Picture 1 (cartoon, rainbow, N blue to C red):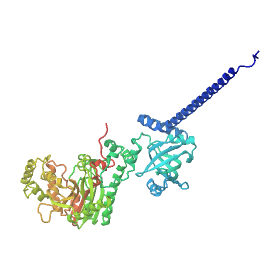
Picture 2: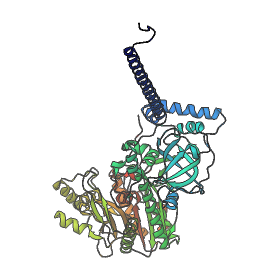
Picture 3: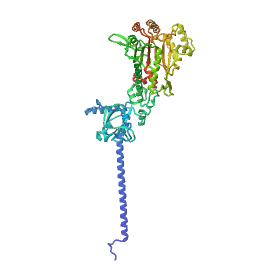
Picture 4: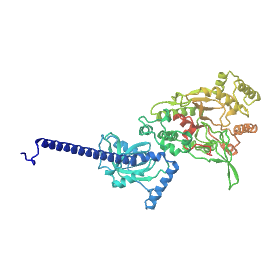
Length: 597
């Protein structure tokens, strides 16, 4: 009889199988649990990273989508909080040790990844681009003087703790002017940077800045490998701020966002400096003459009128400084010049602005032949200096969508006799007495024949000017002197010594436009009074641009003006040529604009 307490052999095998299956299930469950936990941890980690990225990266994008008014309000609120906490958001002073340009020259030769941690440098400029890499590292593009350097703000190198660092840099915005003190170095990728220990916002940009489409676009626009130089074509397609109306009205934004525009105005300054240096080297004396006159003399133009309350007297804004400068030559200042504003109450177009800048000089014991030589020396030398060695410039004469033309300033310049060349080109035989009715009618018929319009009054001088513009000026692409103008067109110029009825005068034309006007000065007071009397006839016939009689000037001539050459140059038009600008507003920092509604 079997002992019932002893389990059968088959039962024991089944128990072992059951235990193994249980272990397998337990192991699988454990593995699944571990996998689940691992996935949850990864998910949580990714979520945290996404949140950090959102906090640090998407904030600028969100702000760019914000209404500009709301953006301004938010910035004003932030400043109000700063002031309430006793902080000054506009520091009085920041000590700069190097400009951005100097910094690049000093440390641009560092090797990739090299840091000079024992060197301390302070830079200042405007933040034009910001990008974050987590909460502990923020990159900025710092711009100053037309140059750019990267600021690599690292929490581990800052004098702020991590929380303060994150909070502070979240409130640094594009457009802010900042000062940073830190050490120079290069990133592993080779970009010159400054690693700041201290970072101070010096002035806050409260308005939303127009944004570069990408960092690459910012680099292309702001750090061109081949920077623009005078005489080369412009690159408006690289501009961040492109709308012309906005650029002219908000020039501060234009200069801030479009570095090439800054170079245009630097060139203007260099042009004026060159002229001043050129004349100073010839022993000229720079002077200033009145801008408000009792008589609008020295040119044929319509003046602006103003009123002096104390004297109860009508005054005119000057249209030219000529008569005053010649009075100084009478007084013994043999070589004088003035660079300054003139004001003419006339049209506004691509080459005319109501106020504009000229240089005029007067040189005793010289005539218009000498002045042509001086003009060639001045302009060809200027072009060669500004272009760094060439007499040739590129200019979009037919618009930026067409190929540019080449203008050659190599001396000597071409010279053409006005009346001789006009008669040759137009097939005319103009009566020699240009003051006669016969000459006036002949020129009217000539204009009619060639369908050249001359708005009234149809004086002989105006008719001639229209014909010369149609036939001669159109041929003047490279610098060309049109010489020997008729007396009726030149009331202040001396009569020609060999050609009766003409004067010793020239106008320099470049790209079909007048750039200079000069002549041997009329110094016979009797003849000068006669010329003014003839101008009075034109004024009575309706030409309100004819010159008025200036009795003080005529009296000064009676004391004796030595043989003198007088010369005038339009600074704005010359700047247009050398900067490939088709609109005079491009070379005037604050051009005349119609008021906005």
